[in-house]
Image (cartoon, one colour):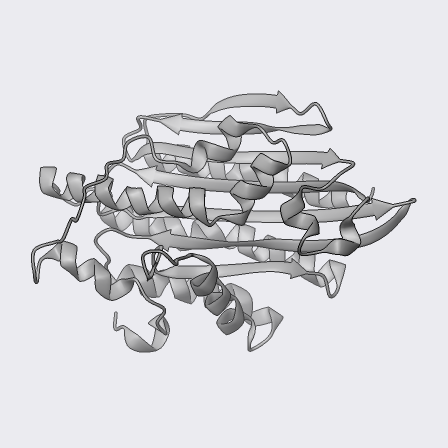
Length: 303
């Protein structure tokens, strides 16, 4: 079995496991699968859960796509890939809970390989996970980052700090001057040692549920009203702005002829914009701004 097929098998199993766990946590709705193929090569399976007890919408997609020509956004940064055929496998998810006290979350794990004249010219792993709360709770943020730190520990003392910093830098809305949330982990172009790098990809993929589900259980029944709901919908607008303006995965998917419905499933089902919105001073809504810049969460928060 080729290396990339081993990754593919892990990713399809990961999608299955996460779907089962989220259906159990929701307790009402189930994922509906939409299998698709791509004319240039490959395909995938997109699964979406809607109108659940916990999740207004939860989408998780697996893709195994290939082609003979990379889009300009890829070859501009990596000119050695020009003219190479390629294959990419990955799982990506975004969950939009109904209760504003349950954070939105995103995770992605992926592997890329490029071949020219039968020889591999490039391969790498990428991925990570991040958390976007609307009403942050310090204990939740600590749990999220402790889980990330612990899964990084076997891969070196500097792994968590480096990939946490990379996450802060990547998920940053430059036009707003704020992070998308409280961060997590992000990595790309990991290609030092296939076996070890694949182990790290699995640690991130398997660690996601450990990081997220305890937060869901703590916040799923928190009371909220129309004020909190409207603030959640307003802040979801920032999620849309990032995904459409800055996310490289969205750009690569569209430019490489990917399936638009699957690429854009990350967008929330309901969202609103309001010109010049400013939260009331000292309100719970105003408090969110204190969390939208890079911080050493493990040193700066208490349980």
